[in-house]
Image 1: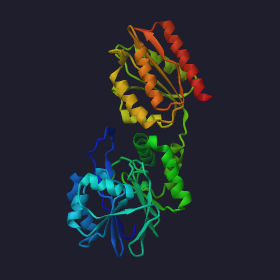
Image 2: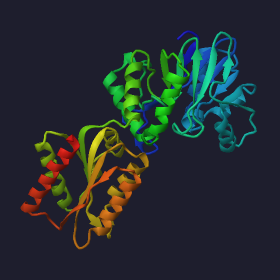
Image 3: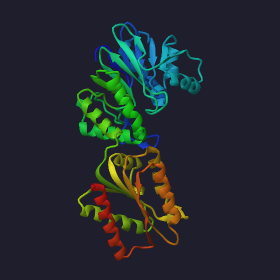
Image 4: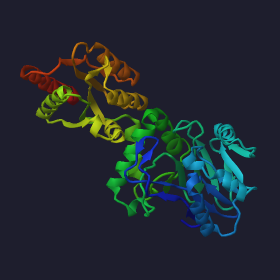
Length: 390
C-alpha cells in the first residue's frame, strides 16, 4: 500500500478477550496514511505502547502526525491515545459526534476533538478521508474511515477476526481459518446487531456507493483478494440465514440429562440432519455460540439443582439471550428429583427474552429415564429434525 503503513501489534499470547476465547491470539490493527498531512487510524492497547511507538517511528521517522483518527473508544482501539497526545500535542483527534463526548468522559482530558458525521471529509493532500457513522456496531461511537483514491475501508470492528498472524493479507493466510475466526467474531460480538449491520452494509455499498478494493479491520487480516467472500458471509449472517443444523447444548450431574440428550441425538441422526452436541462444562462457550449463528434448531438441557437451572446452563442462557441468535425453534429438557417446573420456566423465560420464534413445551424425566422413555426421547429427536427440514 503506497504511503499507507501498518503499525499495529500482534498479540500472540491473548487467549481471552472479555470472556470470548481467542485460541489463535489476535492483533490490534493501526494504520498510518502519509500525504502532505499524516493521519493515524486507530491505535492499540496501552501495554503495547513502546512497540507501537517504534512501529510508528519506523514508518514515518520524525514526521509529525496531524490527525489521530479514532473509529472507536474501546481500549484495544484507543488505549495509547493519551501517550500519542503527549508526543504529538498538535495532532487533531477525530471521532464521531457520539464519540467526542464518550472520549472526553472516558479519558477525562481537556482535548480538542473534531467530531465528524457520515460523509464528512478531511483532505490529507492527494488522499481524502471520508467518514461513515456505524452506531452500535458495536458501540454508539463506532464509525469507519474510507480513504480515496486508494479505495480502502478502515472498517473498525466490522469484518474483524481474532487471529495472530505475521501475514497481513487474506491471500497469505488459510482462507478457511480466517473465515472461521470471522464467523466466531461476528457471532460473539455483533450477532445481536444484525439488523443494524444490514443497514450499514446498504449504506456503504449502495447509498454511498463506495468502491472498496481493500478492507482493513481493527483485528485480524486485511481483506484484499477475498472481499466478495467476506461480504457474502456478512450479508448471510445479517439476514439471519440458517441451515439444516441442530445443536444439543446441555449439562448434567448424574448423567440423566446426558442420557436424554444422547437419545435425542440418535433421533436427529436417524433423519440425516446435521447435529452437534455440547456438554457445557467440557466446552468453550464462545465456540458454542459460534455454532448458533447458522443453527436452525437448538435443544437445551439442564438438571434441576436448588430448585432451578444448573449454573452452567444459566450462564450459557444469559450469554445466549444477549446475542439473540437467528435460531428458529428451541426445545428445553432435563431431569429432576421432585420438581422441574421452576427450572423449565426459567429456561423458557430466557428463550423468550432471546426472541426465539418457536419454543417447544419442556420435556422432563424423573430421576433416571427408563428404556421406554429413552425411546420416546429418540422419537422426539426425529420429530424435531423433521421440523428443521420443513
